[in-house]
Length: 338
Image (cartoon, rainbow, N blue to C red; front, side):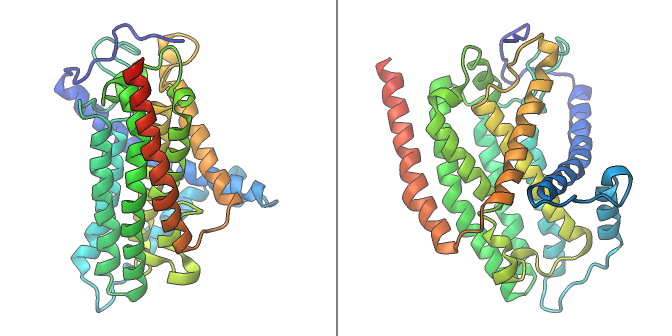
């Protein structure tokens, strides 16, 4: 297993220009990686469904994401008479901002992996995973505001579903990670990764990992938990009245959240940047683990049908929440006894 030069350092002091450079890199990576994930998803869905997927625009269809972006940018921004225009404009901005801000705490390497003067992460705050949950809670306002401000009954129903779903599954999501925090003895993501030098927490926290995975699907509105975006029931839900790049921004935020959930899963359960070889390969192992989780997202979308809304709520409150609570209690008892 690889080891960085110093152990994980929380709130490591960096020069101001390094922090600005990191912020620019994070935004550039997000803008580049979301179209790539979308292309991979469409290609894999095609294979899962015995078809080719996009293969017309560019060689092997590689320019299809660019064509999609240009199409969205060229579409008219229509606003219903019953809508609140400035609220409709700010809703997708909230969704993208909260998703990108959460991505900033995902560590791809420790201080010393690529140099002694900076760490391979945006920021490493002492409250760690609580930072992610704080911005995750704010993301709810983007969906709620978008649905309510549209002035459409279908959009409003979609936003109410989003509110109920996010609240229901965010509790189980938080509890599923509490066992890891108890074992690591820290909220800092870099210290949690450092605590997995000898073994990954997915071994001791397998139940928590399963709960986190299911709740992560619900948090990102991905199938089979994509009820807020149900075309058959809500004519698409909270984004019904959005067009052009505002519509695209909501889905961009959804794919960023997929990357965030995959990054948190890799960090908390799969050893983070740890892997064979020198410390310089730390980001590679982290990227591979995130990519594997993203492929799993796509695989589940192609496999499972959408749940009914009563099934979704019952599963969250009656199954996941008791299991997550029991997992935390057992972990706390084992840690205290040992």
